Amino acid sequence: MQFDDKVPIYYQIKKYLYKEIIIEHLNPGDKLPAVRQLAVDLTVNVNTIQRAISELVEEGIIVTQRGKGNFVTTDMEKLFALKRHVVEEQIEVMYNNLTALQVSPDEVLEYLTTYIGQRKEQDNG
Amino acid sequence: MDNLLVIDQLTYKRNMRVLLSDVSLTIPTGSIIGLLGDNGAGKTTLMRLIAGAATNYQGSIILDGEVDKTTIKGMVSFSEQLSGASNDARMGDLAKFYDSIYPEFSMTNFNLLAKNFDLNLKQKLSQLSKGMRRNFVISITLARRARLYLLDEPFDGIDSMKRKKIIENILTWMPDNASVIVSDHHVSDIANLLDQVIIIKDRTVVNQIAADKIREEYNQSIEEYYESFYKEENDND
Image (cartoon, rainbow over all chains, first blue to last red; front, top):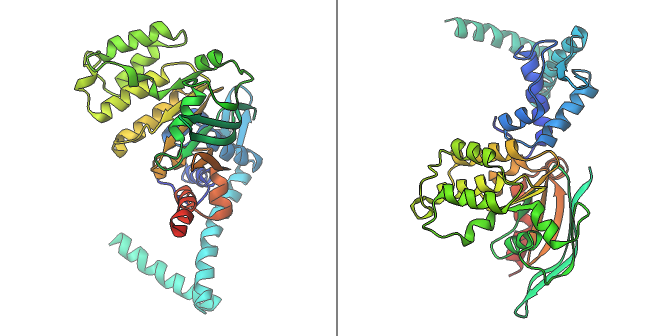
């Protein structure tokens, strides 16, 4: 995994785990690899992994079972909310960039619809 | 987190020269610390003192509550220990030697490390490339079950693929109750690995800070932050 040098590593690991869950590399109820294994795989230290996981536990995305390890929650409502949150973050960035260019909200929607149409054609062709 | 190592007002002089001046720092248990500084800033001297290579210093070095220098020596695994070995010695024989002098040396772990690094233990030190020699030193150092590992420039002259392997082995073999101090002057090699950085300059510690705090509060990479300490000096010259 390639890290951005200027962004806290624990934060980037949180994002990485969000993604693994959203794209269902990690399914609801799945056990996460051991903390040390994650540390070796991502070449970061154990405390950094531990901090990221602690925050996911606080957010209710990951559940710790004493003596058994860390598991992805089976609370589907939590997981839908996570996906919505991550998607909205991306949209927010785009929306802010476009409104900074004085594109109106209605135009944003228009541009987006046109773009999606073009992309669908491209990707299918 | 408990503090594993506490150094207070450490000053070390040799032949009328000050090699370390008023160094104070604390290292939490279970952490990986980057010791950063230019060549000659005092990194190796500090590691040598922690490892018990010299005893005629002022101030205190306390490791897990122990102050006795011989006791501390047995709890620290320092990557410099190979420096006295003969070039005619075979790696396998050297490993047996370390196994005989260090009670906490694990031959099993050493063999796993050596295999992971593809070392041919029948080879003599004189036959090794710089990179292979580094890998052997790391294997010897990590094969001891210590409380504190001191790795002095472990990535010097090592390409990025091999660097990753060394980092993986540090993470794999470091016991839970141990800490690691890694010195380096190419900060980017180890930036992701660190809990904290200690910046050493002009023979003293000028700062100790959490790695993610640098990124979070200063929006800087560790490299930029570290370089800012040395840049000031160049500007003033």
